[in-house]
Length: 174
Image 1: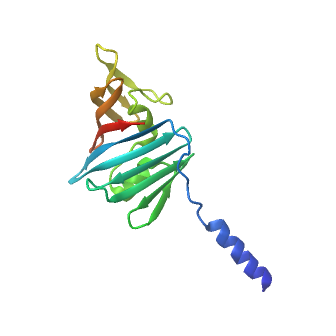
Image 2: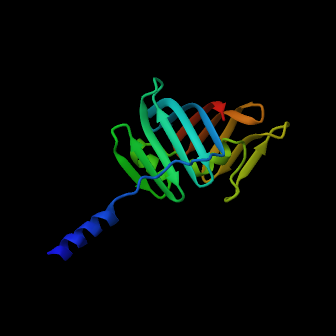
Image 3: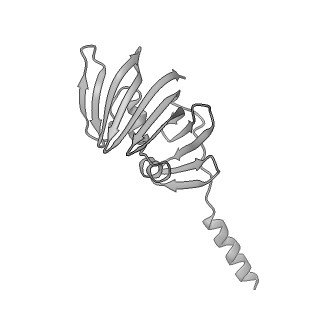
């Protein structure tokens, strides 16, 4: 009997999901607004994002600041927590956000794209303006249009992918 209890306890521990932790040191920390359009649905809200090479923490909230989703990536694991406290996991942010939020969020490529550069891990088609800054790029099936810069960093972007349109307006960098 004791062996059965220990086996059940061990099995329960093995099945428990470990909470993913946001990055402690970051490459960038940005804030701004996001608008998403997909099919007949649309959403606008705020975005706060802390990014490091090994992880991300992205908070999406309503225009009034009520939390909608918290996305944490640690290595190859991604976890999304809704305002109701429900947790979902997947190996990538795009499939996870599409399943839970209804639209794809290209977290893996976006970390480079918001900094005005293509990701180095996949081929990209790039279009630069006379000032040498990116005007558009196509990578991973996404088309990114840079609409405005604040100095060297993009401040307004439009991303499209198979019926999805995302608009980002970045208002602060840390």
